[in-house]
Length: 179
Image (tube, rainbow, N blue to C red):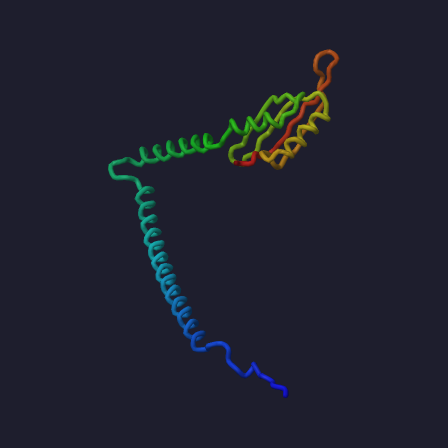
């Protein structure tokens, strides 16, 4: 005699328990959604309040205080602009840039001038070398360095040094990568 059991007709999962778990998870997700919406709306309200406060403070700072003449106020603004420019120039690490330049400058290269442009971050380097191969080596070292980008040889020319010596005068433009 052969017995066959049909397992497919028997329910092995308690659907009532699964439905209850789904309802609990759904209620929990709904509560989290409501909390996130309330936090978001509170944040938007706070942002609008801060923007209004910022606007009012800026108008107070940009207007001339009472009791101060227009001439004195414009002179004060000019002084502030001047000192902010000094602070901006001092905020760049020039010693670090010079140290990095010293690290990448090989033997046989003599730098004669450094002309930095603080607005664009560009540096013009003038110098002398014994041969053009040393200038090429210097440019390759600058390119390999992470401290300088956009390296461009602006000019080079042969010069006479002493009675029998020869050399190369060069000019390079590069940008200092701000760190």
